Amino acid sequence: VKHAATFAAARADLRGVVGLVPTMGFLHEGHLSLLDAARSACDTVVMSLFVNPLQFDRDDDLRRYPRDLERDLGLAEGAGVDVVFAPAVETMYPAQPLTRVTVATLTDHFEGPHRPGHFDGVATVVAKLFAGLRPDRAFFGRKDAQQLAVVRRMAADLSFPIDVVGAPIVREPDGLALSSRNVFLDPEQRTAALALNRGLAAAADAAEQGARQAADLVEPVTTELAAFPLLEPEYVALASQDTVEPIETLDRPAFLAVAAWAGPTRLIDNVHLDAAGGGFVADRGVRLDHPSVLYQEG
Ligand code: PAF
Image (cartoon, rainbow, N blue to C red; front, side, top):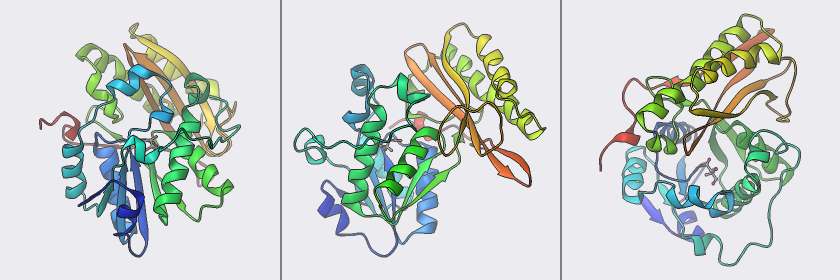
C-alpha cells in the first residue's frame, strides 16, 4: 500500500474507477467492510486517514481519539487498499479555512444540536477530499446515518460527480455497533452499551410486524436504556432518511436513532427502515463471529 501525505502524491496512483473510503483511522471491521465494498466496485481504492480537528466539538474527545498509523497501514494493506492518504493537519489546513461547507436543515436535529459545528467540519473536510482526490464513488457507513444524509446532499448541492454509497452497520458478536471509541468502555459501561442494540432490535421487529407510530418504535429503546442508570440518553427518535427530520409515522424510508453517554464515552446507533414490498424492512447490520480487530494487540 502506498502511503501518501499530499493530494498530488495520492492522486498520482489513482486509475480507472476510483473509490474513496474516508476514515479517521483506528480501523475496525466497519471500515474494512467499506474497503471491501470499494474494492469490489472500483479499480483503485484510496482510503483517507485524517483525524479532522474541524469536526470535533470537544477538545478532550479530539485529544484522546485513538491513533495508530502503523496498525492502520497494515490493515489497509490487508484489505487491498492501493493508496492511504494520511495528510498532516498543516497539509489539510495550511491556513485557518475561511470557507466552510454548511448543510442546512438536515443538521437541525439529533447530532446537530448536540455537537455544535460538527457537521460543518465533516461537510468541509469531505468536500476537500472529494475535490482533492476526485473519486468516482465514496463509501460511508450507515452507523452515522445523519452524516450519510449530509454528505449525499452536500455532493448533490455542490455538483460533485460522485456516487455516495451507504453500507450496513457492522456489530461486535454481542450486537454492540463497532466504533473506534469502544476501546474506552469499561466492562460495566460495555454491558450497559448493549442496551442500545437490544432496544433497536426490538423496535426493528415491531416495525417489520407493522408498527408505524414513532412512539411505538421509540418505546422499546427507552425501556432498554432505562434499565441501566449509568447510561445518559440524549435522544431516541424516528427520522426521515432523506431530510433527517423527526417523523411521527413510519411512512417513508426512515431510521430509528439513539444517542447516549456511557460514562465519558458517547455512543450512537440506529436501525434503517427501508421501504420494501409495501412495508418496511429493517437493516439490523451485520454481526461479527469473532472479536473485533479493535482489541488486537500491536
Ligand atoms: O465518519 C468519519 O470517520 C468522519 O466523519 C469522516 C467521514 C472520515 C470525515 O472526517
